[in-house]
Length: 387
Image (cartoon, rainbow, N blue to C red; front, top):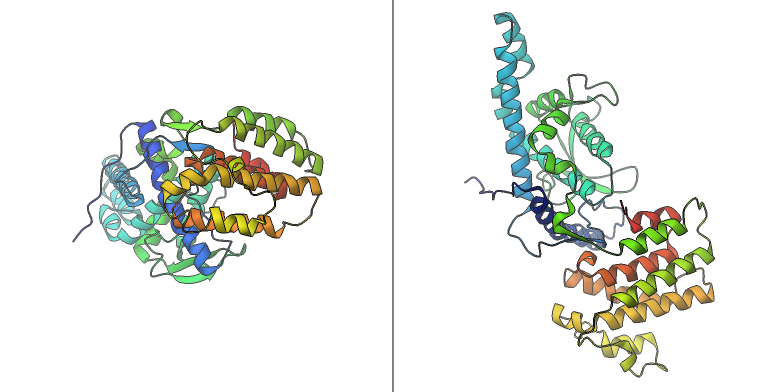
């Protein structure tokens, strides 16, 4: 029985908001895989940054629905192109040459390839929407995937996340950067269609392929983010941090402290005035982090999203205090106390499927730790674009 796919929105801003919400669901699958296999090098193209939140809070759509939409539009573009080529052919010999290059029947025989490449295109679009890559990278990655399918030294489909249609049947392998992926041999019909989409000059580096033309015509929503149905957090702070580090090549201790101070100030200004439990009401001054966690932030105390909501501000503040203390002590390594706190965060975010973009103050806390410990390049990336 053929699966039933839902239609995606015809409005760009709604499409993007729902797409980001679906990406949030997908990012947890990769996180689970990272934890289960203890491999930090798994790529997570679905990860939505803390400063970009879709207004769509829930959707019945799945990644498969977006991939099915791409597949349908791609087949439509291919079919239309082939018909037009044949119609404009000068004679029967020309039509025969065109048929040998690509026919409607060839499209029908390449179902596995079409399922794979459509999902992979959506995956790269997720990286584009979440500002991990630029549009030129998006097309370069697609072209690289196409070439891997038909080049004689590869001839393979490569799946980098568990939702990819070829993941389950693929053989585990490791990329040069340490990332674990699954790889399976490409089909002959798939190779032919991949070469056609990468063409007309597939072996020329940086050449544009038919795939770019088809995507630009058929689904431009994949190629850019319309933020109309999204919330972008802390724009002024992020603009200030970019300015603070402009032209800097070294992330000095002083600059790290300055960034953390600005982030903490922004965190304080973001605190709501509701009934969540503030840290200052706890008599914790003479107790260890281990004791505080046992009483206030145990798995039982944070077992539901409702309980997490009540405790979140306090846990964020406690973590920020320890980050600040470590910067004042100029420690070169993370203290056991801070490691204990981040273990609490890792467990609760994994267990409750927490996404930082749904909790912007949590995103600021994570950014503060990033300012403490990350490279300048990584920290800049986590600030994100403010354009």
